[in-house]
Every structure is written in C-alpha cells, then in structure tokens.
Image (cartoon, rainbow, N blue to C red):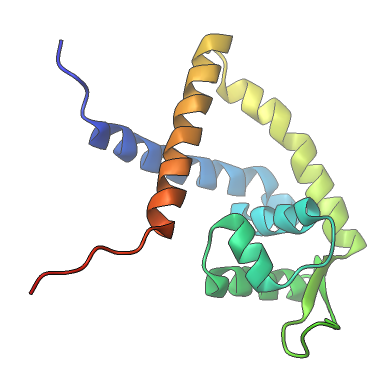
Length: 154
C-alpha cells in the first residue's frame, strides 16, 4: 500500500473549512453573526480585556485588515464598542457590549450539540487522532509563516 499524498489531506481540510464556515454561518445567522464575527468576538472574550485590532489579528493569525473589517461591522451592529486606548491615541480598544456578550454566549451554547451531531460515528480514538493531525498542521503553518523567506535566485 502506497503512502497517501499529503496534498490530498490539505485539499480535504480546505473543503472541510469551507463547509464548517458555511454551516457555522447558518448556525448563528439569527444572532446577527457569521463565523468571522463569532471568531472575532471569541478573540475578544479569550483575551479577557479590551484589545486592539492588531492584538486580535495576532491572536487569530489573520491580517489586521481582515480583522478591522469584521470589527467595524461588529461595532456597527452594537456587538463591540470602541474605547480610548491610554497606550496609543490612534489604536482604539475593542470591548464586548452586553449585546455582543449575549450573542457570543448563545453561539457558544449552540456549538457543543452541533459538534456532537457532526461527530456521530467517530470514536474517541478517531477524534484524538484528527485533533493531533490538525494541531500538527496548524503548528507547521505557524512555523512556516514565521520563517524568513528563502533567498530567491535570479
């Protein structure tokens, strides 16, 4: 039996990501959230304090610009609020509003039963193995992003 092509794993992971994003959007649409909004709210919650867009982008491994677009949308929707940053006049801090906290809490409450439904037919070893593989790929991506690009030859 030949060794499976790791490219196939990456392609399947990309398809899974697309489907999870679409399903996550549907799961929380009635809360005024999308997967991206939920992710940014979660980053604010995880930090435990008001944070700058740059801080959130680093936490999420995303570009500052993409987080800025979502953050602006969350502020418009009343789920996040901007507060002055004593450490930096231009980089304001983002913090949850009560409405944002309520939406995030409800979205999170929905996540566990949804995940359990998706995992029907998987045993504990399957889940452990999948989790180990995904974590390993995440670490590899983080490490490859932090390495200096190799010198280009002319």
